[in-house]
Structure formats: structure tokens, C-alpha cells
Image 1 (cartoon, rainbow, N blue to C red):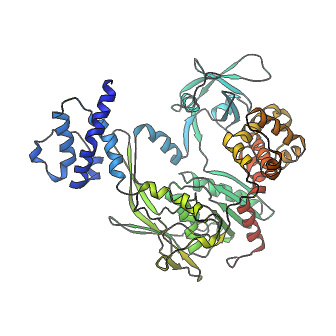
Image 2: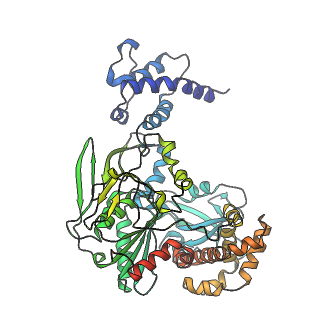
Image 3: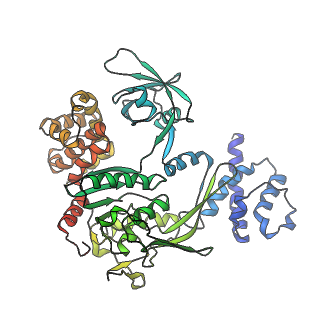
Length: 543
């Protein structure tokens, strides 16, 4: 056994002792944040505030072999946090860059959207205004080298390629490109710059009067993006809005509050937070935004959490709009981030947030983190995704909105209009296609081969009409067979609408990004279709 493994084994052997003593003596997280190495004390002179540090110092000074205190910290801190709540976490230094990029809403890179095709990077789109577009890199180009390293056909992992393309803003990188019309590679020298990470996937008019906006996360740029997209829809005659928060797991709290504010009257409560060591803080609507006059429907599901639930809860509790879909995740805890000296961070839960009626929608987590996340399996097994009547809350969780509606806390936001998980057309054949990624890979190949003819179209509807022929399904069936998925005609017929719609949507995305994808995929989106029907027919007491 080598020295590294021996050291890790020693750490594993000693870890239970350290954790047990630390928990018994009281874990002081504030001390861990301000941690610095101290001289170990005689075992009999442990003092309560420094017990963990004293033990670590004693081991470091007296253990039979050498040990690394840094390794102890990396193992011990996550173990401590496991005894708190599911959302208090430790973020190692190596993970902080990616985490901060998501919340900040940008990163430094070359600005391309790409996919792997036959072990080669295929450029789907050069991001508007980014270094790649400015330099002349085009959709359909294949990236084969980065600086002096060949990256095509060598089995390199996608994450490794991404790390090579990213780098500090202002730094240069040579990118080798293969383009169909040109013999031999072309080398572009790119200067890395700030590349936006958009938190709004798409916004467009579904009908002459009903607009649609999908928010995928809440970052520092989300509110600005939202107002820009809302203004665009208002200029196109939007009178009703469907705001899609499905699958949005949250992010920063402030943009969620500001987006809710855009629809509420001045002085209405949006949310309040409170914790044992945090005084109650109320957040009220104050701005006069055009969104206050829109009829509003919000879509949620079991993946909508945290900041998404703040928006949905504020709208529901103020009787401002209708919530459609399935019960949300149930995260009502607020985290604050403390940076540590080595670049790592501690995100500690410091408060709970409460919707305007006073309900906390946080799910129970007293049985531990593993049980907490198994709740999704329980929802499926007890039929909650299919039947609204399978969901029961005790009377103690009942709250009343100003309009007299009953809402519940303690386990997510319950929609005003329940839409079951749609299993129509779902066959074992379709599941196999999805797991193997066959539909997506076929769409990518088709887009690449027919890029010249497809590039003549500027809208999703034009692309969809162009693809409306009997040959597409036959080509797909042949592709699936060649890629190890046997065609079952009866199941293909049953799943035909889903398969064809997904193929068209993915092909359209490869040409027009999300503006091409969503207008097509909405044809098989049951929840969205129900929302459009409800909001346009005003089939709700809220409208």
C-alpha cells in the first residue's frame, strides 16, 4: 500500500473518534470558518471552545505516522454539516469557480455552444457578441485542436475540453477548426472574454395576446433579463403571461423577490425571513412595473424549488395569479455564504422564509438527507404525480389567502390547478431511445448534414413545416437500428407524436437555439397546453 493510501486509511480510522468528540463537545462552525493551526495541548487540558482544534493538534504532534491536517478538515467539515440540514453545504476550492459562474451569470471563455459528435466537438452556435462569433467561427465547424493539443478523435472527456477552452479574460487561445467547405484546418487565435450564462431560456408570443417566459435559474442577471424579455413581449401586444418555473431549483433570492414585485401592488408582502439568530425581515412590493396589469399563470413541478417557490408563493398568497402543475420541491431555507481563507466556502442555513400568509413550505428533513431526497420516489409510489387526491396535509398546515382560498405549508407549493404527469405515448421503446440519446444524436446528425438547406429558415414554424414529411421517421428508424435500438413498429406508432416532435424540436434548436426548440416542443407539453387554455378562456376565479 502506498503512502497516500496509508494516510487515507489512518484518517478513516481516526475520523469517527474526532467526529464523536467534536459533536459531544459542541461544534462551533464559526471557529471552523476562522480556523488556523494551533499548537496541540496536553490531552488533559482540553478547553470546551477549542476541543476539535486541540484533538487535531494532539494527533498531528503525537500520532505514530505523519498526518495532514488539511485532509482532516476536508473530511470533517462535510461530516459536521450532515448533522444540520440538507442545504447547509461545504464547497471545496476546486468547485467554487463553477458555482460562482452559475450565480454570477457569466464566465470567461471563447463563446460557443457545442456538442460531441463522433468524438469531435461540433459547434452548434457561436454566442452572439462573443470572441468566437467576432473571429468568424460558424455553426457546423468542428474544433479539432486547442493550442498544441489535438482534442478530436482521442477520447478526451468533454469537461477536459471545456477547461482548455476556458481561461482568464484577456488571455489568448489558438483553436483549430475543420470546416466542410475548406480543405485542411483553420486556426483562429481568440481572446477570451466574458460569456453570458442566460437564466431565461426563451420568451415568445404563444398567441396574439399570450406571452411565455421560461426561467431556468435565479442568478445576478435574472431580473434584468426578465424585464428585457417582458418588455419585448409587451411591445408585441402581450396581455397575458405564462411564467414557466418548472425544473428551476432556485439560486439567488433577490431576483426572485424583484420578479414577484413586478406583478404585485405597492405594499403587498412578498416574503419574510426569520431564524433563531436572524430577526424577521419583511420584503414588500414597491415598484410600478407594467407587469402589474398582466393576467398571470405560473407553472411549477417537483423540480421547482427555493427562489421559484418564493415567486409562486407570493403570487398565490396575494391572489394575483393562478399556479398550475404539480407540487413544488419544498425548500424554504435561506443560506448565507462564508468564504474561507483557502478559497472554499461554507453555505450555512441561517433562516427560514415564509410566504405572505405565514406558511413555511420547507419539507421535513428530520430523518436525514438520504430520506429527504427519497421523497421524490415516495411521491411517485403513492400516486401523487397522477392524482391530486393522493396529497394530504394536516389542518395545522392550512392557511387562508386574502381572497379566501385555502393554501398549505410544510411541503412545497400546491398548485391551484393540478396537472398530472402525462404518460400518453410513453412506451418501453421510447424509454430506450431516451436512455441511449438516440433522438438527440439523430437530430444533431440531421442538422449537420442538411445545415445549408435548413439555414434558409428563420423561425421554428418554418423548420417544422419543412420537416413535415414521411421520410423523417424512416430516416430516424434506420438510424436507431444502426445505433443498437431495435424498432418495434407497434410501440413506434404509439410514441410517434412524441418522437417526431422531439426530433423536429432538437433540429430546430441546433439552428435557432431555444427560440427554435420551445415553440415546437410545446405541442407535447400537456401542462403548458392546460395553462394556455385556462388563461385564455379565463377559466379560473383568479382572472
